[in-house]
Image (cartoon, rainbow, N blue to C red; front, top):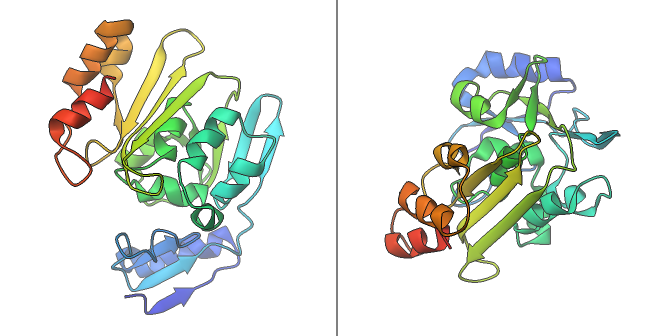
Length: 242
């Protein structure tokens, strides 16, 4: 239950408040996760980020810098965002949720059925932290989870990306979200969500450089899905290699 709501006016103040309250506090973006019934926080103190001016999309040639507090709906509406990433953003079915959810919040939440994380990881997006460090999402999750993100960088929006979502209903939880992006030097990145507790990047399969039926069979063998209300293990394996 949230008992204390703090509203810093600068990034420095936000970091100071986090240091003061330590594990008892959590950063609050749009609130679509921390206030939701299934994902609400158990921490008593939230540090709201809406006054920190961390919004907006900036273009520099083919690269993009997206503020961490930019709403997901802004991604869908912006002419500066590639259509493939807009498609992944639209996998969040509700416009109301897209208007509330922030890009940084979608990354920090690390939800099993995340729609945007597969696309961002496939695009090799870089996170800019409040301390100025820039790192990829996988390293952030392993070493800096919970650190304040101020922006997301895309180095080249021309990078080909394909996204797919499988769900039982339009507004239901995803059984699977998948993203595949072509690497500049050849090869591809393949990322899945919804199958395992965390988003899954298939690095070993990426290194095989295979395609067609061989690729389908490799994915089928590589995933380790859990049976739940979304579907059985065998069904999830099947659609993963489909």
